[in-house]
Amino acid sequence: MAGGIRVSGVLSRGGIVLSASLLLVACEEKNTYVPPPAPTVTAATVLQQPITRFLELTGNTAPINSVDLEARVQGFLTNINYKDGAFASKGSVLFVIEQDQYKAQVDQAKAQLAANQAAQVQAEAEYNRQAQLAKQDFASQATLDQARAKRDSAVAEVANAEASLQLAQINLGYTQIAAPFDGAVTAHLQDVGALVGYSGPTKLATIVQINPIWVWFTLSEQEVLRIKEALAKQGRSITSLTRDVPDIPIEIGLQTETGYPHGGKIDYIAPQVDPNLGTLTVRGIFQNDDFALLPGLFARVRVPLGKPADTVLVPDFAINSNQLGTYVLTVGADNVVSQTQVTLGQLQANGLRAIESGLKPTDRVIINGIQRAVPGSKVQVEDGKIVGVAPPKLDEGDKPLPKPAGVAPADAPSKAAPSVAPKN
Image 1 (cartoon, helix red, strand yellow):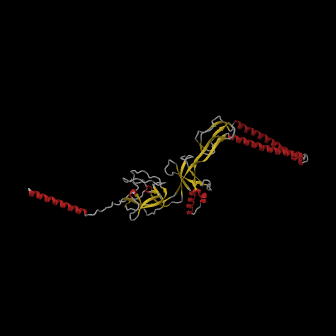
Image 2 (image 1 turned 180 degrees about the vertical axis):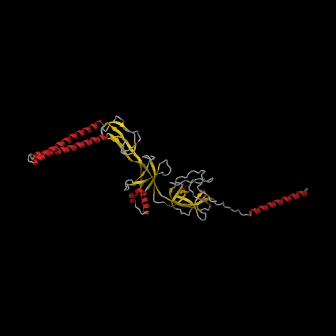
Image 3 (image 1 turned 60 degrees about the vertical axis):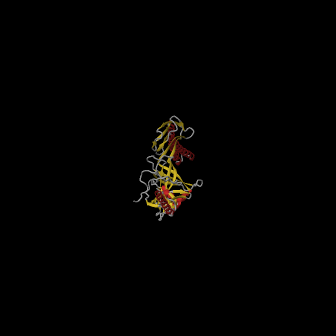
């Protein structure tokens, strides 16, 4: 038994020695840091396409003609020949004022004219008779002068009677109020039987011509200077716009409409800037056959600035902002991320944003994995393509950055095809 215990004791001490040896070997190994792999992002070369620069403004629609229909003679209103709000053709009679009195005045003037014409005939005959007698020395010069005076007076009386008849006919014409042009007539303001025109002109209704229709808007002084600069590049001056206004297109859109579906032409530019407001008044004219545009509506106005020019485009959702302004994240040839400040242009209908300055046509912009890209760090780059539709879905854990001021928000992610098409 004593030997068994001894053997067991020896084995136990050997195990302790072996464990201690292994522990010492392990302690001699150095701890090494293995850096995580570089984050993966998708980058695409910016697009460069011919883009027309536009000046975007706001304005209001206005009728090309608007006239108050008024009673210019006194009398009772006898007829209203239209339905409130209905369209009226030029020359159609809309209101009638009692005419009996004015017809009688016309008849009276005609009778007076006839009497004066008869007196003129008699005076002409008497003058001719006296002139003949005077040649034969049978009538004195005084008698001839009297006959001449009566003849001239009769001629004047006829002219006066003709004028009176014309005035009576004009007043009779005022008893019918007709449409001066094609247009829609507002609700009548006086009812049948009302006495109108008794203390001056009485407003009966308003007729409005809305086809074609005008859109009025103003340009600020800075915008005028921008246009002047753009025209100078074309070898033109801003004063030439007065001559060339029929050649300047203009587009508008209403608040509930997408884009600018209505096209027209600029037909008036004020010859000077208002010194009090610092604005230049401009007017466009639009065909309005379907009456889609009504007077008084707010309208978004877009005017092209020159011809299309090659412009750098990036997805609008790839643009972010900081205290210095707006920027995009780009990747260089060494796959190092850079923060590039840019000057924004106009947002296009396909969701791409024009870049006025800051990017070159060969630059690669990060369009996916933006949240994982840190300026100055290296990334793994997957090639993508900008196609200008909805932004790609955010990766799990990514959060959208706040959009810069003046940048329209991108559409919400959907199951539609992503805007980035990675290369196989």
